[in-house]
Amino acid sequence: MNIINKRQYYFKPKQIQQFLMLFEEDYIPSTIIIYEKRMDLFKNLFPILLDLFTIILGKDEGHFYMTSDLICIFVFSENDDGDNNQSYQLYSLHALCHELRHRHQWANKFKLSEDEEEKDADNFATNFMKDNSKKIKKIMKWKNEWEVEEGD
Figure 1 (cartoon, rainbow, N blue to C red):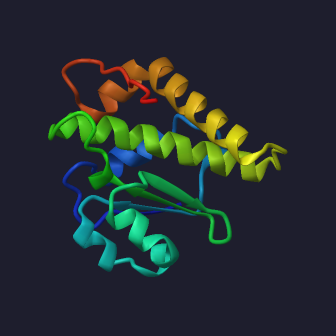
Figure 2 (cartoon, rainbow, N blue to C red):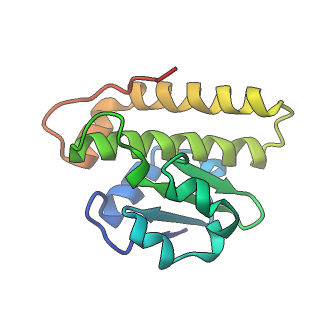
C-alpha cells in the first residue's frame, strides 16, 4: 500500500494508515493519492489526466481507477461546510470511504448499475463514518465527534 500526500496539511500518513486499518483487505487499493490543493494536481498529473477539467472545477471529490488500483482524493473539492480544517478532513474521509467501497465492489465483482454502485458507495461511506465516529475522532485527534450530512 502506497500513500502519496506531498503537502500533509490535512492528513499525516499515519492518520491515513490508521484509518485504512478499519477496513477489510479487499477495500484497500495499491495506491492512494491525496491532492490537498489544486496545485498538487500537477505533481501527479498522469493518473487523473482524462478527468482533469472536472477535477479542477471541484466537481469530483475522489475517484477509483480500477485499471491501476488507485484511489485519488481531492480535498480542495470539500468546501460545502465552510473553510474549516476538520470539515475538509471529515468530508475527505467520507470521499475516501466512498472510493474504498468502489474498490470493494470491483474486487468482489458486484453486478450493479452505475446508479446502484453510487448509492451503495454513498450509503456505505455515511454508515461507516457514523459507526466508526469515535475511532475516527481519536485517529484525527478531534475534540468532538462529527457527523457526515449527505447532500441531495
